[in-house]
Length: 342
Ligand code: AOF
Ligand code: ZN
Image 1 (cartoon, rainbow, N blue to C red):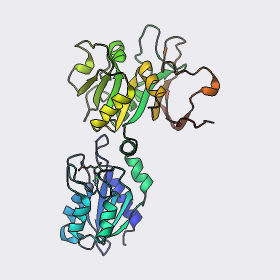
Image 2 (cartoon, rainbow, N blue to C red):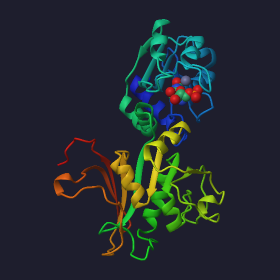
Image 3 (cartoon, rainbow, N blue to C red):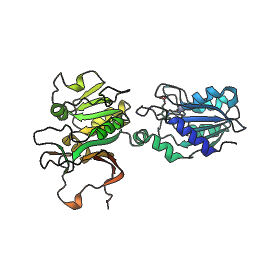
Image 4 (cartoon, helix red, strand yellow):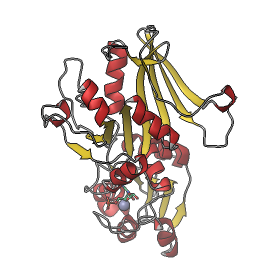
């Protein structure tokens, strides 16, 4: 049985998923097939600074790459970044045909398809492109928009409160929701809070398992704002890298994180910081954990947004509603300004 392009692309996407999620670089997979339809090499990108997927697959294929087809989830790069251009590696290996999914949205790296075509390689792009872009949603967003993607996470009671009147906030949601937060937090390049939240809650902002142990790679902990932090604050305990930014402008902070190649920022609060990001139009997705709990008093999840009438309400686009034990997780994207909800 010979492999069709779609089957091969699915295999390449599966390989790509083995790459690191919160890396500065996208997750990319590649499959090289000989003229008889047999796979002669596979590869995936293990993260910034390591060889690109095509280079790994070509190395596995060796001489068998001559006259072969390379199926890649991202348009082969055309630049020398941390490593050399994949377009040249494919040409040097004598590949006759290249099929890719997503076009490279990274301006500096793009152009590989054109280079290959000009050199006489048959090139076809766009196969399962949406799936490939979805795999690197934050990276793609960051390349296109020029800033990291912002996910605002909060936990609240049914009446929308994130802390009781006395300031206590542990625990609103149950263990299943809290475990889910750690899973999703691990996908972010950075976790961002304001100095107010550090002073009020002393969060550790690390990724931990149910036994409280640190698991794997930790996102950069970022604290923004002008208030001084006590030296014994948990974010300063050295268990994960921490960046203090004496800055209160959301866009300036995102710009600095973008320069550090952070592609996804997980905004954890508190209500004032969340409001500043929402008002600036800098929240791309909301992940709300709602517990069947009532407080009746206490701080709401987000501070004032300058909305005084129902007509002006900010309506979100929910794309996922999941129950986690007794709690509900709602994931929603924000409509771009000017768009009207239902
Ligand atoms: C590919 N195959 O496997 C990857 C690509 O800093 P560098 O040299 O690693 O280059 C990073 C850029 O190269 C990245 O932003 C993206 O445009 C492309 N990544 N390209 O052909 C790969 N990981
Ligand atoms: Zn490359």
